Image 1: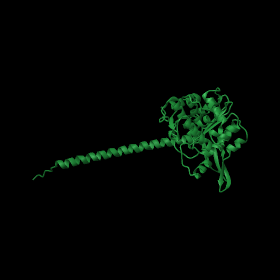
Image 2: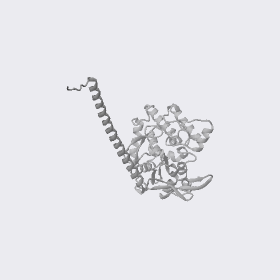
Image 3: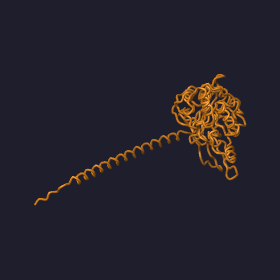
Image 4: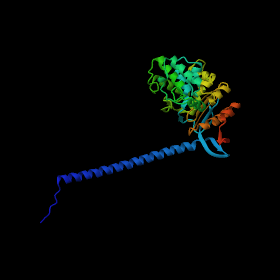
Length: 367
């Protein structure tokens, strides 16, 4: 007798379902494998780029503790001669970087081009990363009131004073983070004034497509002689436009050499006349502009710095790892190479390391 195997419809469907599931699992495995390979290739490429950048960036500063070099800060730097030519360079100063707050003079010039009549301390504060001292905060409040605005109109985030001494006193007084206290509030108050002046939207003034930010991009490109390489978002929420360090140095040179009465020259003159409003009592930008006649100086986050002297000599640099402790020593050394002399260099360049209460080392320039 012949036995015939019979497959029921239910069993056949289950078999097909199992087969389909197996195929799906196989496809998923292949997809995951491909994704893993792609991620590995991407990570490898990123590592290669990082290695390349690190390899080509020279050491700008060393951390020396008890006579032992325990760390190094690498980066790029450019010095321009009075005629605008490159006199000295380290690393790759033609690679685009985000200037961070070093671009605030350029943003302030855009505010003036938008028709806002700022001058003196107000214009200096528009280009500031202020320390959050009482005189900074009072003027920000006044600038807002003059435009019919309040702190609620600011779109920068709340923060503590940038200066450590001011921050400790601020907290000791029982105060909390505030939008006015944030170091970029002067810039934001000026941007809002431009919006009020031109009947531009207030709630979108930080969008790259906003008329004011398009004007900022124009100033950046005109003064640097470069096209904006990338647009990001700064810590305060404002658009951030990437240019090279060489372009940044050329922008600062443009500001100090611009014709009197132009937006760029008005910003430079206000900053140099009121340096304490650009930074603060205990800040290197203030010391430099106060003690070196005609100097224009502005630091930025992630260890960016730009300076121009009144004859057109200029510099810009960035420390790759963003280490702000290297900023002063590198700045002092770069200024010395540009021919600047005086006690202010020692003051700016001093960056001691402590062991307990004793000074046991320093951060020092390495070029």
